[in-house]
Length: 336
Ligand code: RAM
Image (tube, rainbow, N blue to C red; front, side):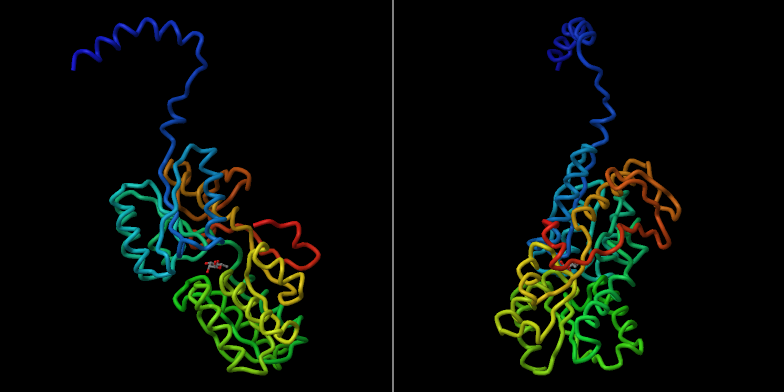
């Protein structure tokens, strides 16, 4: 017990002497490193890995420690188990994409009651169960744009289907709601939505349900898959079935997954945002909430590093930006 104190005292003059030649160290910068956990819908989904890479980039400049944990299948009860364990680990913030808005809400509220900041990203939970939601783009725009793309490609005629993720996903369900509103406009009167099927963001199941669509609806002209996993499976199935051009696939995909299908015409146009920037913005927001430099209040503004100033909007939602459309002429500019 006494020994270390003696060593410290004995070393003090030496340390004091050294301080003159050492660069000034700001202890606050070390203290500002927070532990922030990303909890995606499921791990093993390249979309969420890209988002997490953005989170890592933000953490590298703030000194935070980030990790990504989550269920292997997109399953809300699996997420609850992880939230409980993150509470026990006393992380400073949880960044979560909800598999179901309500199922994870009680455990997130428990986390918040213990001082953990909760930022939802990609797919929201109940607003009362998070401090801020980082929305990738306007929900209405994302939903409508996918129908607009397919309408243009099909000359506003024919049977179409939706291949979604899980039936409880907040984001997909909200987008599908706006797809239906768009489809109700007079210009789509000859386009008929025949069914919505769910591939649960699982590549094998998404492939099976995409195959099922082609068998069950031989006159099908288009598939909208508002999920990066679903659109990849649908494109593959249509391509293998030699239905390119007969069945148009669109929705939300990553340029790396879609490049081949855009070039061969199976997916002439699709949309997305920059998932890396989404993760970056979520990390910066979580950091500022933990640091107290941002209050989770409508109208509060903060510096979001390379993304510039951001303001918390209605319902405590922060918007990343407009969705991007990708086609043959621009896809080679994107690599994620
Ligand atoms: C899948 C997930 C995610 C969604 C993207 C478009 O990877 O369902 O929640 O935002 O697709």
